Figure 1 (cartoon, rainbow, N blue to C red):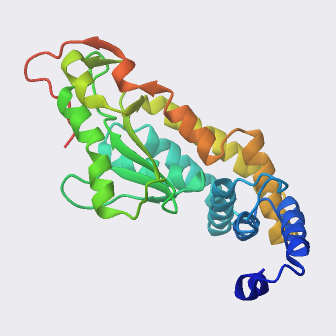
Figure 2: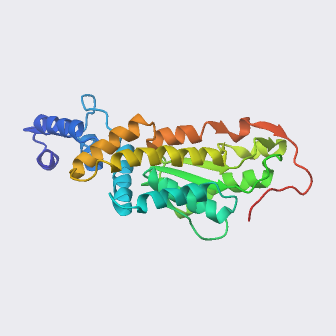
Figure 3: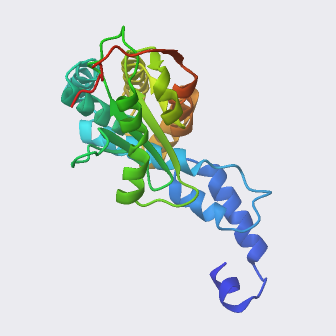
Length: 270
């Protein structure tokens, strides 16, 4: 293919495309093969490869290696993630979000600075999940206009502070136990989505079960086999990055039930 690009000659081009097709079919969990397959030009005959999932699977493999194939560290880390993700203290909840993102294969960080999101999950510059955590909300009140503006405004922060393009997918998410939104806030909600903190605990439980199954088979398994096994398990559990995002974006704030906030009830945690 490099020879074709340099000279315009078509000799061996179809052979190269066929090799890439076969490689993509055999190594669906390896992101470099997915990218090579995409670069072949016409993709009509290529096996569909989810590059986003391939990148996530490689990150999950690295997290498993960090936590160890044997020993007690894995269960300690999972137990701590579960404890953090159920905390009402917002800093502890942020740490739980960070570890959950890593378990799911995202690059996960807690950015510093005034107005920054509480946590960001990313797959390269292709996908961002931008979190505003309100784990200390009292459940009976509605999500306030201040909370909505803060959470939806993180999209502007991301545009100013992270690499992105016109094809970048950005999910702005507010985690709150509240099930209604202030009627005055709906106008500002745009594409903001809501999820209760309990759903994050469920995600920790589900991905931990997947990782336990894979971890039990790690010893003596080649790196390629680890990736393939992880890929199968993640897909079977419907925990690929896009499936996680679909789940988290199920409740759009602008379509939540509305009610009026009491005077002075802004509901922020900072």
